[in-house]
Image (cartoon, rainbow, N blue to C red; front, side, top):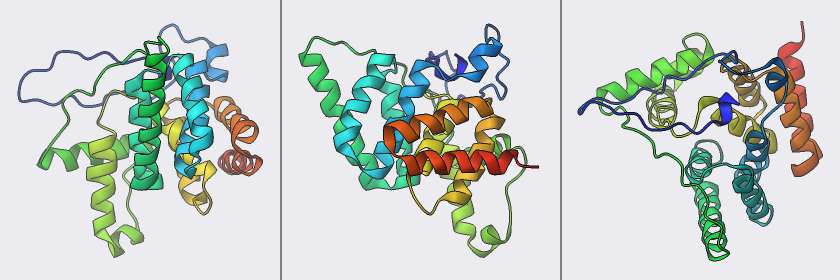
Length: 244
């Protein structure tokens, strides 16, 4: 499935960065209607990884990481997912989760399991280009320019969202946007007090090509493998988006 494919590096002319130009719809060549209704095995494995990383549940994160690598997620994709988690759950939980991944990869190597390293991210925008790239990414993901009284009140957070989250992080092309959004939805569902952000990212997930049935499948995985409350929060957010 497109959201789970490993992106390979392509040549970039010196001095130019590669924008993260990813498909915004789930109608790519070779994608069937059945595939659009279900998450791939790799995507399913990503859900508990993001949730356990965001909540700091290292005891359950380790086994979830092993299942994700067994399902075919590369080390680069898994690592990038955990790096991204700091934007939603903070540096301590991201760092602890990365430490757990490092331990899991080392243990598997000692067991003779050679996990695919995956592609490293290509050149990213810097300097003045970073804010422009982040603003373009945020607008594309959200479907319209993002503004409002909160950002007028605290312009610094608007800058950090655009330049850092959507510029620095979302411009890194070793994890496709669908996987980034699936991980974000999973993390926000596992946490409390993030309903507004969860609703926003459910909508963004659908903007980048995840379907309502796929998101409901993610909610079911959260309810079964993480906890019932996480599954309910995800399901409620989908219901709110789909209600007339």
